[in-house]
Length: 261
Length: 82
Image 1 (cartoon, rainbow over the protein chains, first blue to last red):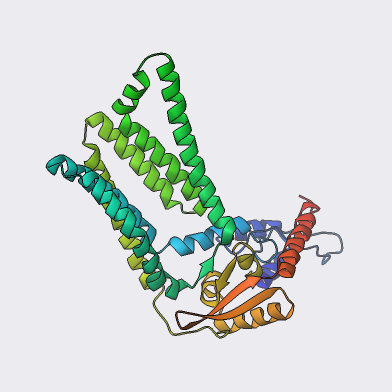
Image 2 (image 1 turned 90 degrees about the horizontal axis):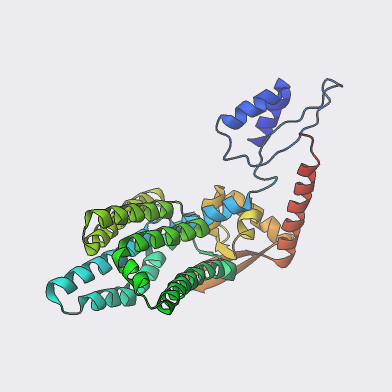
């Protein structure tokens, strides 16, 4: 492929051709600038723009693709959606029956979903795309983001609360209660953006935006918070199932092809 | 390509590399053997839940070589005329 490109470029003696090839859809193969100094005409030095993956790999893109391939199975979406749905249903049932469902439901989910998610990864994902370990660096990055978000959120909350109480007013707390959905929406957008960026999962941006948008609208239209959570949870789960079906079709289970093995 | 894939992760198995690189099993296997001979890639064979599993990872030497290669390419590209 690369040799073919270089041949075509030298043959045409034109930088323009290189630019045309670049814009004609070879951008995935090519990621780097490569120079061919050709003295075919004895006078002209050809400087050709060709992106060649093998010459200077875009490591961030490769890392992003590795992360993405690991999470393209939709399992993350299904179980994240299940959590959100569980919270929504928990709050709704709590209000309807006042039986402590608001605590029980999320508790059950937190205790059960993670082990099921790990088992599903082992049974569905790993046999299809193989095993990958991102190592301590990857785990540390996610943990650092998670802790950073927690510390920043709690820090901001306590700082504002402390400042408000110093003035002998409950305005700040009242403001939080009155605008809870907007705050949750913005928080969700921030968390989704951070995790989406660090994991290379761009669909998390969409989830964040969707959650923020729906919660904003819900706040102004006075829609019950739990209903919005339930709808969001179902939406994310549906996307997850669609991704899972597509993943299973794209990577069917095959016999052991590993020659090294 | 293989070196770049292994550089951004800690380790992976053959199937994962196969999907990520888009190579054929035979081609990938041949490249891995050469990289192993050069001391750049470490191939560990083990059993996980009674199934054979081959873990592939860059060695320290491989990591250093790839880093050096990238620096050289970077220097080369920076020297290029616009």
